[in-house]
Length: 396
Ligand SMILES: *Cc1c(COP(=O)(O)O)cnc(C)c1O
Figure: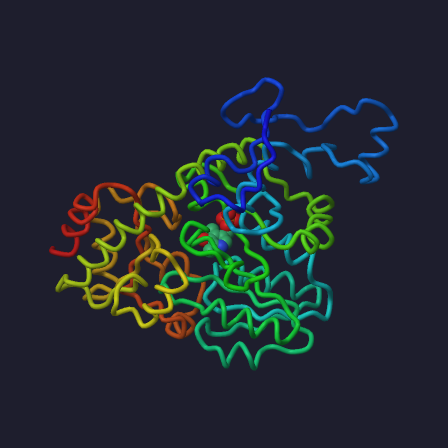
């Protein structure tokens, strides 16, 4: 029997391993996977009650699946939100959010420093349906303020930003959004609720790519939206039911096992990243390190108050331009050369020719992405082995 527990009252570690689980009559201890597309009703009358919404319960796995629901309830508890909707990917989360909330004539203000496909979704696709987006500098409050108009439905940002780890003041931007009658949406992929709780800071909605730290081991693609129950039930869930970007129960089950170790992993990522950032800062071949856990970071104080850890992503500029950056990357033996992040394995990438390669050289300069910039998503290998792998390329 599963006891009815209010998971909000428990700590993050407890929520991570227990929230959302409802045991079946088999009394299993671990979370089961429900691999079924549809569900059987006791009677024609019950089928009618379920379809009309009079009776809660499973209908079809595009929008009701017990494994996905367990993931949703667990992530909602972790983020401190009333309701979570699990979807097929991080991009599906943002797309489902947009399709649910926006209509022709609406306006969005979006940080310029967001995931590349998020920019394309607003710029190339939402624009086709008459939704206009203004892109602004993440840290420039005045720019946000002057971009907001009576048509603005929400502000959208990621913090820390990728790859330069700039920090948005979530509280200030939530205040700005609310004073103009719009919502603040935060993509919390980089911190996860283990390090940052945007809803507690005043944000209205959090979106996730579960593909990154929530899985944490680079296995499955998935996403989620967390926020107020009424808003999600009325405006966003109906689009998932109809639009169909559903999370697979297998992926939900993998994410549940990932969430069990979220608190421990994020602490270990932060410890390794801080150690690496400090080592890089003292290296003569490194010009500049971007990491919010270093007191030299321009927004160190804000990061200290807003986050409980500085995260696992570091960027740095090496002496010698693109050649030196590529040499460093190619000399590594154990680091993975891939643009993915949030994995137990450390990954290394050259943003100017990969994640930001579609920008023109002028746009890259404006975004602060230099040719000698390298980004590392610090994993859980021993710190001395990560350092040794980088030392080789930096020294010759
Ligand atoms: C990866 C990522 C996404 C998109 O997630 P997918 O699961 O790859 O669709 C969105 N936002 C951020 C910050 C990401 O890193």
